[in-house]
Amino acid sequence: MILDITKISIPSHPGIYIMKDKADTILYIGKAKNLKNRVKSYFLKNQNYKTQKLVEKISDIEFVLTDNEEEAFLLEANMIKRYRPPYNIELKDQQRYTYLRITNEEFPRLMVARRTRTGQFLGGGRVYGPFTHGSSKMLSIGLLRKTFKIRICKKLPKEACLEYHLGNCEAPCQFEQARQDYNKHVADLESILRGKQKLGEFTRTLENEMKQASENMQYEKAKEIHETLQRLGNLQIKQKMESTKIGSNEEYFGIKIKDQTAYIMSFKLSNGVIKDRNKFSFDLVGDNSFSSFLSQYYSTNSIPRFVIVNEIPDKKEILEEVLSREAGTNVSIISPTSGKRREIINLIMKNLLLIATKGVDPALIELQEILNLKNVPNKIECFDISNHGRDYAVGSMSCMVEGKPQKSGYRKFRIKSVQGQDDFAMINEIVKRRYLKLKEEKSEMPDMVLIDGGRGQLNAALDALYAIGVDIPCISLAKENEEIYHPDQIKPISLPRNSQALKILQHARDEAHRFGVSYNSAIRKFTN
Image (cartoon, rainbow, N blue to C red; front, top):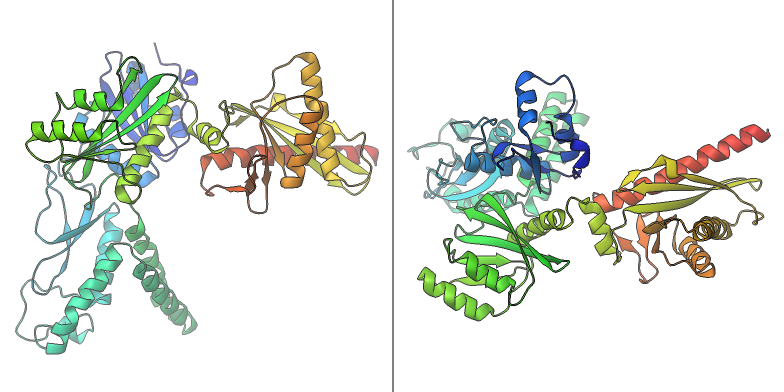
């Protein structure tokens, strides 16, 4: 029997999906920029024979969220290597992503460093990365070598070679000044590889060169610089799935409490690579705690040098002492507040939300937390006013259920009690009419009301709800800066533009606006 995909809540986030059979054996691991779109595509008709056979065996699908597609790519590769699912292809050369390496020679070179199957780097020196786009990476290496005058010769020659005469190297093999300047060139190069501000300065220099080349009608050169700028974007991608800056002997834990149940997820690192994840849960009964969980967990698992957590467990010092004695070395329990470690903890907490809420869209959970709501805003009703001169004004309401438009729930309103263009009074009227009717009919109320507008529109809606004795969380969204106004906060709330929570509010607002404009247009057409 084929799994009913309509009964599974799939997040619209980047990440990986893990398909399992009835025995909980992993069949296939895949990555996606949008998990919902990708996973649903497996259950469409006209799939090839092998895909059909895979789908027939799927009994459950698990999701692990990442912050972007690049991270999903790397985590997928690590998970495939760890579990070797039968329907995945694992490349034997293992060269899916690479690193750049500054050698530890007297006059260092910029090289490509790769991992072996055991995760060790080949060659010595300082390693930066990972970079997932091979061709772009190689072309960027050539550019960086030339820009920072990094030598390419395997052995230092006795006199200046062709690279010196081409202007690509200052010849530290021959000139004393070049020897003195070389370490500074290497330091500047490393600041680029670390993604610090100098990369921005370097990019601006190239942009000026591209503009100058274009003005001089050197279009081929301008095109080459333009392509180089695109390739350099790969150097700015920060990865959490792998990092050479993270220690090789640490394990990460996140804990979230919901309804007297503790949900825990761990990420295990090996040589700076996130190799695997595990999830656990236990009831908060008796002495059950995060501290007792860690003590029990490490009674059967190897103990790392660092245990990284989202919150410090109780009796931390005693637990550290016990673990240190068992491990034969000092063990530290750390709760980071910033940096790469904090980024990994944040990613774990995002995944815990997905588990603890049993598949509820993480964006709705994010809204609940940001707005301090008692319940998840599964049903949101959004109001807007559509004005066209003094004689044509209507109200509209969109309805979002589980983050998606439910068009059967849309409503439209003819303004009855307001003369002229008074948006505040119109909002007050339609909100009052909507929820007074629901109250009288004893119908289900929404989890949240959203108003298109700023503080004034929000206050008008709140006055309407108060007047009819209806208690529903109510906020507004101002379009100019996409700021959220909350009745309990003086300053508006600003969310990142790529926030999925913000996108749900924007979608609701845009739908209400579209519906209102359409209704307004129909009225004017009919009356004229």
